[in-house]
Amino acid sequence: MAPLQALSLLLLASLASSAASGYRSTLTHIDSKLGFTKAQLMRRAVHRSRLRAASMLPGYSTTLSSSNAGPRLRSGQAEYLMELAIGTPPVPFVALADTGSDLTWTQCQPCKLCFPQDTPVYDPTTSSSFSPVPCSSATCLSIWSRNCTPTALCRYRYGYEDGAYSAGGLGTETITFGSSAPGEAPAASAGGVAFGCGTDNGGDSYNSTGTVGLGRGSLSLVAQLGVGKFSYCLTDFFNTSLGSPVLFGSLAELAASGGAAVQSTPLVQNPQGRSWYYVSLEGISLGDALLPIPNQTFALQADGTGGMIVDSGTIFTVLVESAFRVVANHVAELLGQPAINATSLDNPCFPAPAGERQLPAMPDMVLHFAGGADMTLHRDNYMSFDEEDSSFCLNIGGTTWTSILGNFQQQNIQMLFDITVGQMSFVPTDCSKL
Ligand SMILES: *[C@@H]1O[C@H](CO)[C@@H](O)[C@H](O)[C@H]1NC(C)=O
Ligand SMILES: *[C@@H]1O[C@H](CO)[C@@H](O)[C@H](O)[C@H]1NC(C)=O
Ligand SMILES: *[C@@H]1O[C@H](CO)[C@@H](O)[C@H](O)[C@H]1NC(C)=O
Ligand SMILES: *[C@@H]1O[C@H](CO)[C@@H](O)[C@H](O)[C@H]1NC(C)=O
View 1 (cartoon, rainbow, N blue to C red):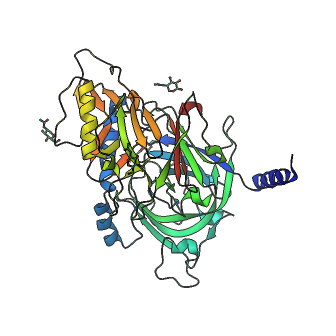
View 2: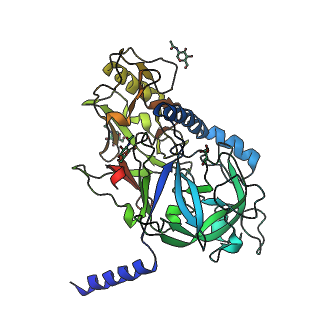
View 3: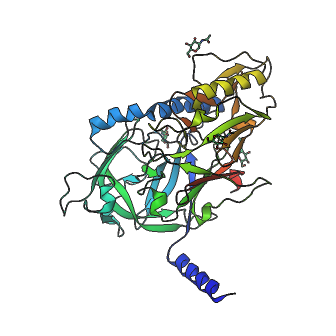
């Protein structure tokens, strides 16, 4: 071995012993512990998908932020809870995972207003690793810049489009990933993570104790851990007994799986500076046929509309209206059904032939992303059978604003977001085995 290599290995080894280079946690779907049937899960998913899509409209957030006088509003609604712990000694922190926002916050003592939570509310005065963030610090400037005096603490107020909010002081803390439970990954901690100590919190908590921000900004947990990338792998949406792994840093790497190669496409930046992960979708195939959708249909516009966001808080993919109609009508044709209702943007359902209880064989749908990255969606990633209505449903809807790749379509595809390189990669994987 050349001396230089030996030296760099030594360096790597010493880095690894001082700070973990990878972290692992589990995402649990918010409906997973409530004993819903498949049909109920679908109804609730359709309802939340509509709320999320509406809340992401740019006009919606402008209206609210002007009345709120807080920082610009980000996404509301999330679909997955992430299990973490905060402080020393660590207390449980069950966070809504949001890839559309950056700030991580938890409910905090002394509570002016805290929503009910199952575990004790985190108290900074009993944690040896808490430090307050002064309002003159760079971290604070990225979130709140008014009324700052040299000794004042950093205050924040963060609102979400669904009406949920958190306000309090910014601090830094140690965040612990994983547990020491037998058979699980050993715990790993990261110190000095800036977070919101929320003493005034409201809105729908979905049994969380706060939010973890996984967006692209500098305050996001991904950026703060200094690992530059994370991946998640969502298990079968209808199998509520399965958790989904979320991995940071060196643990997030993708490997070719079952003969399928890792594919990559550049992340693009919205000119309006939003925190979401945008990718360039260039076309869609169904089976062997490239669908007649003009190349520029999914282009991101200078005014910030258009484009495609990859979002873990949206269940069902939505496509801009013209593309949605082409896809839906090709699916209708495959099923021997007439073209869809011309006014509705909802996920279309088609009556199943009498006595039919299962989806017929259907070809794969392929999303063609920039750079030649093809994402294959098997039938069960875009269709489902509705038992109550005896119908076959396409789990893709239409939108007038921006297309969103939702998490129903991401089941059993490991997704990697590299914010350093600016790239999204993916590979089909059995996520329950990762
Ligand atoms: C929160 O958990 C309780 C039981 O642990 C459950 O009854 C309730 O429905 C849950 N709420 C939500 C919104 O998930
Ligand atoms: C859920 O996944 C587990 C592990 O893969 C499997 O054993 C179980 O049969 C699945 N349950 C359902 C309802 O599909
Ligand atoms: C779509 O347009 C982009 C940029 O204009 C181009 O690079 C790409 O090759 C086009 N794709 C197809 C399938 O025509
Ligand atoms: C089409 O959809 C609209 C809106 O959902 C609905 O009001 C209308 O009744 C539908 N028309 C038909 C023929 O199904």
